[in-house]
Amino acid sequence: QCVKPRAIFPWRHSPHALPRLVVPRISDTSGLEGDENDDSEDSAKNDGDKNNLKEEILESDYFKKGGPLGPGWPSPMDPWFRASTFASSMHVYGLPWYAIVLPWMRNEWIDEMEWSFCEAFSMGVRGMIEDTYCLDNGKNKKYGDDDESENFDVDFDTTIDATPLSEEKDETKTEKQVECDDSKTDDMLDHDAEQLYMLQRDLRQLYKSARKHSLSTKINVLLRMQPQFARIESMFPVFGLNRQLVQDHPALRHSYRNLVRNLQRKHKEAQLAGRKRLNPIEVISHINGGLNELIDSTAKLTNDGKAVTTIIAQVSIQCREVFCVRDLESGEIVQGDTDGQPRDVTHLVRFEICIKDSQEGDFEIGRWQITDWDDLLDGNVWFT
Image (cartoon, rainbow, N blue to C red; front, side, top):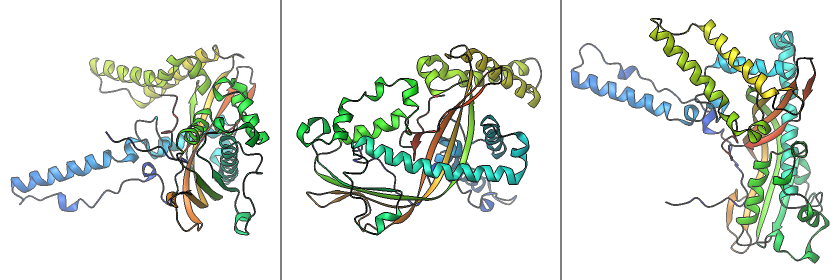
Protein backbone atom coordinates (compact mmCIF):
# COMPACT_ATOMS: atom_id res chain seq x y z
CA GLN A 1 0.00 0.00 0.00
CA CYS A 2 1.29 3.44 -1.00
CA VAL A 3 1.74 5.80 1.96
CA LYS A 4 1.06 9.47 1.30
CA PRO A 5 4.21 11.51 1.98
CA ARG A 6 4.16 13.75 5.03
CA ALA A 7 3.51 17.41 4.27
CA ILE A 8 6.49 19.68 4.89
CA PHE A 9 4.15 22.35 6.20
CA PRO A 10 0.65 20.96 6.91
CA TRP A 11 -1.66 23.51 5.35
CA ARG A 12 -4.78 23.60 3.19
CA HIS A 13 -4.72 26.39 0.62
CA SER A 14 -7.99 26.25 -1.31
CA PRO A 15 -10.82 28.62 -2.26
CA HIS A 16 -13.34 25.82 -1.77
CA ALA A 17 -15.01 24.78 1.46
CA LEU A 18 -14.24 21.38 2.93
CA PRO A 19 -16.32 18.69 1.15
CA ARG A 20 -18.15 17.81 4.38
CA LEU A 21 -19.65 21.32 4.47
CA VAL A 22 -21.12 21.00 0.97
CA VAL A 23 -24.65 19.62 0.87
CA PRO A 24 -24.73 17.03 -1.95
CA ARG A 25 -26.90 18.01 -4.86
CA ILE A 26 -29.84 15.75 -5.46
CA SER A 27 -30.10 15.48 -9.22
CA ASP A 28 -33.44 15.72 -10.96
CA THR A 29 -34.99 12.29 -10.49
CA SER A 30 -38.17 12.98 -12.46
CA GLY A 31 -36.86 10.84 -15.28
CA LEU A 32 -36.35 7.98 -12.85
CA GLU A 33 -39.94 7.86 -11.59
CA GLY A 34 -41.26 5.81 -14.47
CA ASP A 35 -44.94 5.51 -15.35
CA GLU A 36 -47.64 2.92 -15.62
CA ASN A 37 -46.72 2.06 -19.21
CA ASP A 38 -43.08 1.18 -18.39
CA ASP A 39 -42.29 -2.48 -18.69
CA SER A 40 -40.85 -4.36 -15.74
CA GLU A 41 -37.27 -4.18 -17.10
CA ASP A 42 -37.30 -0.37 -17.35
CA SER A 43 -38.94 -0.07 -13.94
CA ALA A 44 -36.27 -2.24 -12.35
CA LYS A 45 -33.56 -0.14 -14.02
CA ASN A 46 -35.10 3.08 -12.67
CA ASP A 47 -35.30 1.61 -9.19
CA GLY A 48 -31.63 0.63 -9.43
CA ASP A 49 -30.64 4.13 -10.55
CA LYS A 50 -32.53 5.71 -7.65
CA ASN A 51 -30.87 3.36 -5.19
CA ASN A 52 -27.44 4.16 -6.63
CA LEU A 53 -28.16 7.89 -6.34
CA LYS A 54 -29.26 7.49 -2.73
CA GLU A 55 -26.16 5.43 -1.92
CA GLU A 56 -23.92 8.04 -3.57
CA ILE A 57 -25.47 10.82 -1.48
CA LEU A 58 -25.12 8.87 1.77
CA GLU A 59 -21.48 8.09 0.93
CA SER A 60 -20.63 11.80 0.54
CA ASP A 61 -18.43 13.53 3.12
CA TYR A 62 -21.42 15.62 4.16
CA PHE A 63 -23.15 12.54 5.57
CA LYS A 64 -20.15 10.38 6.49
CA LYS A 65 -18.20 13.10 8.33
CA GLY A 66 -20.98 14.84 10.22
CA GLY A 67 -21.59 17.80 7.92
CA PRO A 68 -21.39 21.15 9.75
CA LEU A 69 -21.20 19.35 13.12
CA GLY A 70 -18.08 17.53 12.01
CA PRO A 71 -16.35 14.30 13.01
CA GLY A 72 -17.74 12.69 16.12
CA TRP A 73 -21.34 12.93 14.89
CA PRO A 74 -23.02 10.04 13.04
CA SER A 75 -24.70 12.41 10.58
CA PRO A 76 -25.14 16.15 9.91
CA MET A 77 -28.48 15.96 11.82
CA ASP A 78 -31.48 18.12 10.96
CA PRO A 79 -31.23 21.94 10.76
CA TRP A 80 -33.58 22.37 13.76
CA PHE A 81 -31.26 20.18 15.86
CA ARG A 82 -28.17 22.20 14.87
CA ALA A 83 -30.05 25.40 15.68
CA SER A 84 -31.00 24.07 19.13
CA THR A 85 -27.40 23.08 19.93
CA PHE A 86 -26.28 26.55 18.80
CA ALA A 87 -28.81 28.21 21.10
CA SER A 88 -27.87 25.93 24.00
CA SER A 89 -24.20 26.81 23.52
CA MET A 90 -24.96 30.52 23.57
CA HIS A 91 -26.90 30.11 26.80
CA VAL A 92 -24.18 28.01 28.48
CA TYR A 93 -21.69 30.68 27.43
CA GLY A 94 -23.68 33.20 29.45
CA LEU A 95 -26.13 34.78 27.01
CA PRO A 96 -29.66 35.11 28.50
CA TRP A 97 -32.49 33.43 26.64
CA TYR A 98 -34.19 36.73 25.70
CA ALA A 99 -30.97 37.81 23.93
CA ILE A 100 -30.92 34.52 22.05
CA VAL A 101 -34.55 34.85 20.98
CA LEU A 102 -34.36 38.51 19.89
CA PRO A 103 -32.75 38.53 16.41
CA TRP A 104 -30.86 41.85 16.69
CA MET A 105 -29.26 40.90 20.02
CA ARG A 106 -28.44 37.39 18.80
CA ASN A 107 -26.90 38.65 15.56
CA GLU A 108 -24.84 41.26 17.41
CA TRP A 109 -23.38 38.54 19.63
CA ILE A 110 -22.66 36.30 16.63
CA ASP A 111 -20.95 39.15 14.74
CA GLU A 112 -18.69 39.89 17.71
CA MET A 113 -17.82 36.21 18.12
CA GLU A 114 -17.05 35.76 14.43
CA TRP A 115 -14.65 38.70 14.41
CA SER A 116 -13.01 37.42 17.60
CA PHE A 117 -12.54 34.02 15.95
CA CYS A 118 -10.79 35.75 13.03
CA GLU A 119 -8.34 37.45 15.39
CA ALA A 120 -7.81 34.23 17.36
CA PHE A 121 -7.00 32.33 14.15
CA SER A 122 -4.33 34.87 13.20
CA MET A 123 -2.84 34.76 16.69
CA GLY A 124 -2.90 30.96 16.67
CA VAL A 125 -1.08 30.68 13.34
CA ARG A 126 1.55 33.23 14.40
CA GLY A 127 2.07 31.43 17.70
CA MET A 128 2.33 28.06 15.95
CA ILE A 129 5.01 29.40 13.60
CA GLU A 130 7.08 30.95 16.38
CA ASP A 131 6.75 27.85 18.56
CA THR A 132 7.46 25.32 15.79
CA TYR A 133 10.42 27.11 14.24
CA CYS A 134 11.70 28.70 17.47
CA LEU A 135 11.59 32.18 16.01
CA ASP A 136 12.54 35.09 18.22
CA ASN A 137 9.46 37.36 18.03
CA GLY A 138 9.90 37.88 14.33
CA LYS A 139 13.66 38.59 14.32
CA ASN A 140 14.30 35.61 12.05
CA LYS A 141 11.38 36.40 9.77
CA LYS A 142 11.61 38.75 6.85
CA TYR A 143 8.81 41.12 7.80
CA GLY A 144 8.27 44.30 5.91
CA ASP A 145 10.62 43.53 3.02
CA ASP A 146 8.01 44.94 0.67
CA ASP A 147 4.88 47.04 0.87
CA GLU A 148 2.66 43.99 0.26
CA SER A 149 3.75 42.21 3.42
CA GLU A 150 2.47 45.05 5.61
CA ASN A 151 -1.12 44.16 4.70
CA PHE A 152 -1.08 40.71 6.32
CA ASP A 153 -1.72 39.64 9.91
CA VAL A 154 0.51 36.61 9.37
CA ASP A 155 3.75 37.18 7.46
CA PHE A 156 6.06 34.16 7.52
CA ASP A 157 8.85 34.04 4.95
CA THR A 158 11.92 32.09 5.97
CA THR A 159 14.47 29.54 4.81
CA ILE A 160 14.72 26.32 6.79
CA ASP A 161 17.71 23.99 6.71
CA ALA A 162 17.24 20.25 6.54
CA THR A 163 19.19 19.84 9.79
CA PRO A 164 16.79 19.31 12.71
CA LEU A 165 16.89 21.99 15.39
CA SER A 166 18.19 19.49 17.95
CA GLU A 167 21.28 18.83 15.79
CA GLU A 168 22.20 22.44 15.13
CA LYS A 169 25.37 23.67 16.78
CA ASP A 170 24.84 25.69 19.92
CA GLU A 171 26.72 28.70 18.61
CA THR A 172 24.32 29.02 15.66
CA LYS A 173 21.18 28.96 17.81
CA THR A 174 19.25 32.06 18.74
CA GLU A 175 18.18 32.79 22.30
CA LYS A 176 14.67 31.64 21.39
CA GLN A 177 15.96 28.29 20.07
CA VAL A 178 17.97 27.69 23.23
CA GLU A 179 14.87 28.51 25.26
CA CYS A 180 12.87 26.00 23.19
CA ASP A 181 15.44 23.29 23.88
CA ASP A 182 15.45 23.98 27.61
CA SER A 183 11.69 24.33 28.04
CA LYS A 184 9.30 21.55 29.05
CA THR A 185 8.00 19.30 26.32
CA ASP A 186 4.27 19.44 25.61
CA ASP A 187 3.75 16.07 27.29
CA MET A 188 5.09 17.48 30.58
CA LEU A 189 2.70 20.44 30.76
CA ASP A 190 -0.02 20.35 33.41
CA HIS A 191 -3.63 21.28 32.63
CA ASP A 192 -3.31 24.95 33.66
CA ALA A 193 -0.15 25.44 31.59
CA GLU A 194 -1.77 23.74 28.59
CA GLN A 195 -4.71 26.15 28.71
CA LEU A 196 -2.36 29.09 28.15
CA TYR A 197 -1.62 27.92 24.60
CA MET A 198 -3.81 29.15 21.77
CA LEU A 199 -3.38 25.79 19.99
CA GLN A 200 -4.19 22.48 21.62
CA ARG A 201 -1.28 20.07 22.17
CA ASP A 202 -2.12 17.63 19.34
CA LEU A 203 -2.23 20.41 16.76
CA ARG A 204 1.09 21.82 17.99
CA GLN A 205 2.64 18.36 17.80
CA LEU A 206 1.47 17.96 14.19
CA TYR A 207 3.61 20.92 13.11
CA LYS A 208 6.57 20.02 15.31
CA SER A 209 6.55 16.50 13.89
CA ALA A 210 6.44 17.83 10.34
CA ARG A 211 9.33 20.19 11.14
CA LYS A 212 11.40 17.34 12.57
CA HIS A 213 10.74 14.54 10.09
CA SER A 214 9.72 16.03 6.74
CA LEU A 215 12.80 17.96 5.61
CA SER A 216 15.37 16.31 3.37
CA THR A 217 16.62 19.52 1.78
CA LYS A 218 16.73 23.27 2.34
CA ILE A 219 13.36 24.88 1.72
CA ASN A 220 11.71 28.27 1.78
CA VAL A 221 8.26 28.61 3.37
CA LEU A 222 6.13 31.62 2.53
CA LEU A 223 2.80 32.14 4.27
CA ARG A 224 1.04 35.49 4.31
CA MET A 225 -2.50 35.58 5.55
CA GLN A 226 -5.15 38.16 6.35
CA PRO A 227 -8.58 37.02 7.61
CA GLN A 228 -11.41 38.93 5.94
CA PHE A 229 -14.54 37.62 7.64
CA ALA A 230 -15.91 34.51 9.35
CA ARG A 231 -19.08 32.48 9.58
CA ILE A 232 -19.91 30.13 12.44
CA GLU A 233 -20.91 26.82 10.83
CA SER A 234 -21.95 25.10 14.05
CA MET A 235 -21.68 25.34 17.80
CA PHE A 236 -22.67 22.62 20.23
CA PRO A 237 -22.20 21.80 23.93
CA VAL A 238 -20.72 18.59 25.34
CA PHE A 239 -22.30 18.45 28.79
CA GLY A 240 -20.41 16.89 31.67
CA LEU A 241 -17.13 16.35 29.84
CA ASN A 242 -13.98 18.15 28.85
CA ARG A 243 -10.77 17.02 27.22
CA GLN A 244 -8.85 16.76 30.49
CA LEU A 245 -11.50 14.61 32.19
CA VAL A 246 -11.54 12.13 29.30
CA GLN A 247 -7.75 12.03 29.29
CA ASP A 248 -7.68 11.26 33.04
CA HIS A 249 -10.64 8.84 32.89
CA PRO A 250 -10.66 7.16 29.43
CA ALA A 251 -13.91 5.28 30.10
CA LEU A 252 -15.77 8.61 29.96
CA ARG A 253 -15.05 8.82 26.23
CA HIS A 254 -17.96 6.43 25.59
CA SER A 255 -20.47 8.29 27.76
CA TYR A 256 -22.52 9.70 24.89
CA ARG A 257 -22.36 6.49 22.90
CA ASN A 258 -23.72 4.65 25.95
CA LEU A 259 -26.48 7.23 26.29
CA VAL A 260 -27.57 6.58 22.70
CA ARG A 261 -27.47 2.82 23.25
CA ASN A 262 -29.64 3.15 26.34
CA LEU A 263 -32.13 5.18 24.33
CA GLN A 264 -32.19 2.49 21.62
CA ARG A 265 -32.77 -0.13 24.29
CA LYS A 266 -35.72 1.89 25.64
CA HIS A 267 -37.16 2.01 22.12
CA LYS A 268 -36.94 -1.79 21.81
CA GLU A 269 -38.53 -2.28 25.22
CA ALA A 270 -41.44 -0.05 24.18
CA GLN A 271 -41.90 -2.06 20.98
CA LEU A 272 -41.84 -5.36 22.88
CA ALA A 273 -44.52 -3.95 25.15
CA GLY A 274 -46.77 -3.44 22.14
CA ARG A 275 -46.09 0.25 21.54
CA LYS A 276 -44.53 1.74 18.44
CA ARG A 277 -41.66 3.80 19.82
CA LEU A 278 -41.01 6.32 22.56
CA ASN A 279 -42.80 9.60 22.01
CA PRO A 280 -40.77 12.86 21.82
CA ILE A 281 -41.50 13.77 25.46
CA GLU A 282 -40.18 10.40 26.63
CA VAL A 283 -37.07 10.77 24.45
CA ILE A 284 -36.31 14.24 25.84
CA SER A 285 -36.92 13.02 29.39
CA HIS A 286 -34.55 10.10 28.92
CA ILE A 287 -31.83 12.28 27.41
CA ASN A 288 -32.13 14.93 30.13
CA GLY A 289 -31.99 12.27 32.83
CA GLY A 290 -28.88 10.72 31.30
CA LEU A 291 -27.16 14.09 30.91
CA ASN A 292 -27.95 15.15 34.49
CA GLU A 293 -26.57 11.86 35.78
CA LEU A 294 -23.41 12.32 33.70
CA ILE A 295 -22.94 15.93 34.86
CA ASP A 296 -23.36 14.97 38.53
CA SER A 297 -21.00 12.01 38.31
CA THR A 298 -18.22 13.84 36.45
CA ALA A 299 -18.45 16.88 38.75
CA LYS A 300 -17.25 14.59 41.55
CA LEU A 301 -14.14 13.81 39.47
CA THR A 302 -13.04 17.43 39.09
CA ASN A 303 -10.65 19.03 41.56
CA ASP A 304 -13.14 21.73 42.60
CA GLY A 305 -16.34 19.70 42.37
CA LYS A 306 -17.79 21.92 39.65
CA ALA A 307 -19.75 20.58 36.70
CA VAL A 308 -18.09 21.10 33.32
CA THR A 309 -19.43 21.70 29.83
CA THR A 310 -17.33 22.03 26.70
CA ILE A 311 -18.53 24.23 23.85
CA ILE A 312 -17.20 23.32 20.41
CA ALA A 313 -17.46 25.85 17.58
CA GLN A 314 -16.56 25.33 13.95
CA VAL A 315 -15.91 28.50 12.02
CA SER A 316 -15.29 29.10 8.33
CA ILE A 317 -12.76 31.92 7.98
CA GLN A 318 -12.30 33.60 4.62
CA CYS A 319 -8.74 34.81 4.12
CA ARG A 320 -6.57 36.65 1.63
CA GLU A 321 -3.51 34.43 1.46
CA VAL A 322 -0.19 33.73 -0.20
CA PHE A 323 1.28 30.27 0.34
CA CYS A 324 4.30 28.58 -1.20
CA VAL A 325 6.82 25.96 -0.12
CA ARG A 326 9.85 25.87 -2.43
CA ASP A 327 12.72 23.40 -2.57
CA LEU A 328 15.72 25.71 -2.87
CA GLU A 329 18.03 23.06 -4.32
CA SER A 330 15.75 21.97 -7.16
CA GLY A 331 13.63 25.11 -7.42
CA GLU A 332 10.49 22.94 -7.34
CA ILE A 333 7.29 24.22 -5.75
CA VAL A 334 6.27 21.37 -3.44
CA GLN A 335 3.22 23.07 -1.89
CA GLY A 336 1.08 26.07 -2.74
CA ASP A 337 1.09 28.45 -5.70
CA THR A 338 3.91 29.32 -8.05
CA ASP A 339 3.18 33.00 -8.72
CA GLY A 340 3.20 34.35 -5.15
CA GLN A 341 -0.03 36.26 -5.70
CA PRO A 342 -2.69 36.64 -2.97
CA ARG A 343 -5.72 34.41 -3.31
CA ASP A 344 -9.06 34.18 -1.55
CA VAL A 345 -9.09 30.95 0.43
CA THR A 346 -11.26 29.48 3.17
CA HIS A 347 -10.25 27.67 6.34
CA LEU A 348 -12.46 25.72 8.71
CA VAL A 349 -11.21 26.24 12.27
CA ARG A 350 -12.40 24.21 15.26
CA PHE A 351 -12.45 25.97 18.64
CA GLU A 352 -13.38 24.69 22.07
CA ILE A 353 -13.81 26.21 25.51
CA CYS A 354 -14.57 24.72 28.93
CA ILE A 355 -17.29 26.25 31.12
CA LYS A 356 -17.48 25.36 34.82
CA ASP A 357 -20.61 25.72 36.92
CA SER A 358 -21.70 24.66 40.41
CA GLN A 359 -24.93 24.37 42.34
CA GLU A 360 -24.00 27.52 44.24
CA GLY A 361 -24.15 29.48 41.01
CA ASP A 362 -20.42 30.00 40.53
CA PHE A 363 -19.70 30.42 36.84
CA GLU A 364 -16.25 30.17 35.31
CA ILE A 365 -15.50 30.64 31.61
CA GLY A 366 -12.21 29.20 30.36
CA ARG A 367 -10.15 30.20 27.33
CA TRP A 368 -10.95 29.43 23.72
CA GLN A 369 -8.43 27.06 22.22
CA ILE A 370 -7.93 25.98 18.61
CA THR A 371 -8.03 22.18 18.42
CA ASP A 372 -7.93 21.66 14.64
CA TRP A 373 -8.18 23.44 11.34
CA ASP A 374 -9.24 22.12 7.94
CA ASP A 375 -9.69 18.67 9.53
CA LEU A 376 -5.93 18.05 9.52
CA LEU A 377 -6.55 15.99 12.69
CA ASP A 378 -9.99 14.74 11.61
CA GLY A 379 -11.55 17.11 14.09
CA ASN A 380 -9.30 16.09 17.01
CA VAL A 381 -12.37 14.47 18.55
CA TRP A 382 -12.25 13.21 22.15
CA PHE A 383 -15.91 12.69 23.16
CA THR A 384 -16.81 9.63 21.00
